[in-house]
Image 1 (tube, helix red, strand yellow):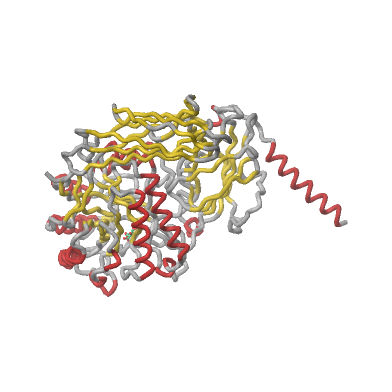
Image 2 (cartoon, rainbow, N blue to C red):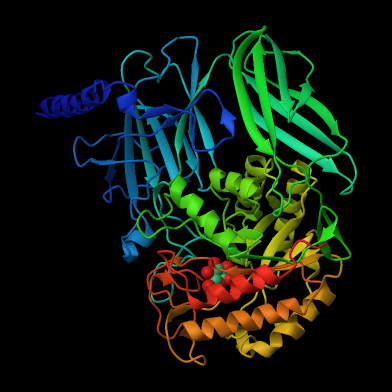
Length: 628
Ligand code: GCU
């Protein structure tokens, strides 16, 4: 009896596996594979893995992804496309809490030569991903908003015929994740924005012919606005060859030729190639004049061209002197807005058009700076470079409890987030600060101090040209904090006259001015930027009633008038540009809220303008933001 049952189980498993091993074979174009990508930057050997994907939820799969056994369901798959947020539009608590979903993609390799190696690249998966190719595990990853790559081994790859890529995505997060999540005392899921699950940004295949440009750094140095600039271009080339290879790199920066030394790179090793150019009269980048330089690179293996890479970057100088931020030597008074890559229909799975719209709205508002709580989509960075928007670039170390920060593994992973953000986004002239967190405890202890020290050190080692910052709760009672010593910029989230704050210290909005003066005194040598101020508005009504358009208008005017009276303030960003989904039960200080929506936006979720939009726009346009 026992053997018969064993035999039946083995047959069932093999049948499932056979289903896996021999899927139907559609043609490549029909596979939705297109050469290139949604961004300008990248190698000429990348392919967008678009077109038809399949998706299925797996609420029954409660197991955490420890050595998860691969078993593929035969049915329950529905067609989808990627990027995808499977729970966009589902505003229920379980949707916010998260679950497990599976993605499946059949494709044929665009190039079947056996000499080619292949990499799969995910731009952003929320939150824990497990990846298989043709039933063989190729890797896993934890964390969203930053890209990761996995090599597709020969063992897994099918050169002729159809490959099946399967991704298990678990968007349940814990208290030590980025951002953290948990439950309120009422049992509601917590979080500062909706926990969209899925392949939230593009997926690529990358072909490697012996050598791969693993990373490019373009670092302009400009000692003063009228000085010549020197530009270092550093190319990290990884060899996929077994034996050593004679590698040569060539390229251009604008119309200037880049000269790299040819080197021999060992099999499976990497080589770093540097070239420097001097620009006598550089064309400087600023939001008013977003001048860019094209960079083109080519790698040859033993003289044979195997890959090329292109990007655009800009030259500008960023300095903090006497507690003031200078861009290209000029003192700035930036005005801008925070935002989420959120959309009512598709959630965080924005497409090009929606990303364009977001940047266009910020420009129309008269903003020179934008901020998000996580690294923005690469295309938004490129649009900010091209359209002229500075980017406060932050990692989702968001409202992390001190009890979590006390765990060395959490601190280490948070520092890793900062590192990966710098490496992913340092070539964008738009990025002007590396922000290591948002609203950690306003009374930092040793754990937070250690995190601030280590993440600032890491960011500066990787990029000595940009300041490091942190967004804090603007609480007067917090006083001056020596633990912020390693930072260059203090971002202050200001809600005077909106939230009461601990012990009602924010209740009276007239406390705003004196509080800012206190911050100025505390951190004389650091630049101060108001990283958030905002008021919910979802109805018309009295100016005295919180939650009305009229109250929001008055709030915006008041705050901007106070900021205009602080000439030493380097910037102020309204929170937020547009409405977005937060969580079930969100009130955000509004007595008549519209949960789960955050309605502090100057734009409704569909982009319609609220009255306060025009007040902010008029002020932003009248402010000399970029100095004389
Ligand atoms: C915080 C937080 C935001 C949040 C805002 C608010 O400051 O950083 O993510 O949306 O408060 O309460 O509106």
